[in-house]
Length: 403
Image 1 (cartoon, rainbow, N blue to C red):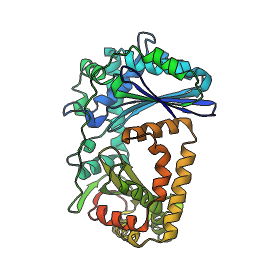
Image 2: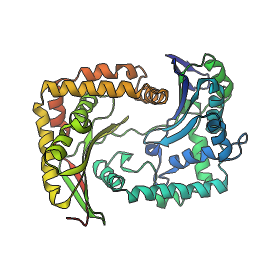
Image 3: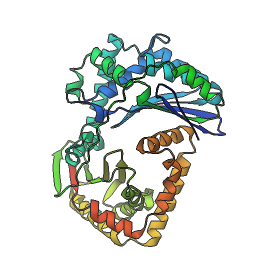
Image 4: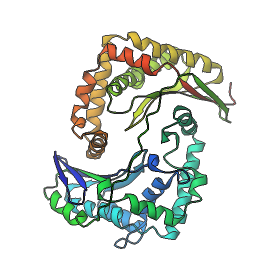
């Protein structure tokens, strides 16, 4: 890997790849956790609006067509601590990709007509979350798990606050936060002239003081929390969650191994117990998510109303059994994680995403150290982490109309 820091503060990481594909991903160090009360969703609005035109490419179709006409893929997403933009295309079009991503980061117009339309689009996106059982539950679980950390707010935004925002509010947020010292770019592929192209595109971008990113340590729960809601669904839907370790801590790697033990496809312990042996659920999944200053560990299950209590009991038992899990279970989980991780980053875009994430956590070299850290997890680590984080669950249950 090579790293370049321009005089204006823009950081660029280049990783050579023999792939025909090239990925360019830009991370802007602002997300929903950066937002203040009254502007929840503003980072997400910026993400939408930068695609809607620049002086060089006056409308959204011009921006999209620039990449799609050469068979490329262009997209973005907003999370708690960052907004990521990525382009994936053939390596021979690398100059175009750098020019397009540089254009939208520096020169977005954000016209009033586009603002009005995209605000409606974002509100519809929020409505879709409300319509989906798992997403709807997730919004409520976040509020239960996080009290101090802004992860309690949905990264997509809050409709009531979005509707009070003006175009000028969003444009101001864009100009205040989109500047070189807030941006890191990763290029994965074969682009020998990458330094020259980066300097040409970004060298004159005016530097500003970096945005302060709020970091808040969420305390572990000291009591069990439960919430039931009735919805006109046939099934029951259940989320059982815990505040967990932030990414980068030693505990985070043990939690990755635990996630694999419980939820590695159809051979995970929870799928085996809840569906394979007992037929209590149709769907069950496990997710450990973590970021700069927070983490969560969540079990998801869909079941009938009559089986809900038994499902909760089995989940509790399986979490407890982790304290004495076998060395074979741990070894199999590590092997699964190694295969899953390495196959995932065969894709240049996924590799760029991982490099950016680990850079943001503290060091892009952690990208290569991930498997080593997973292999270092011991049975004692598993036991310690289970006792530390899984004492007091927060449970959300959507009670359907079925039996």
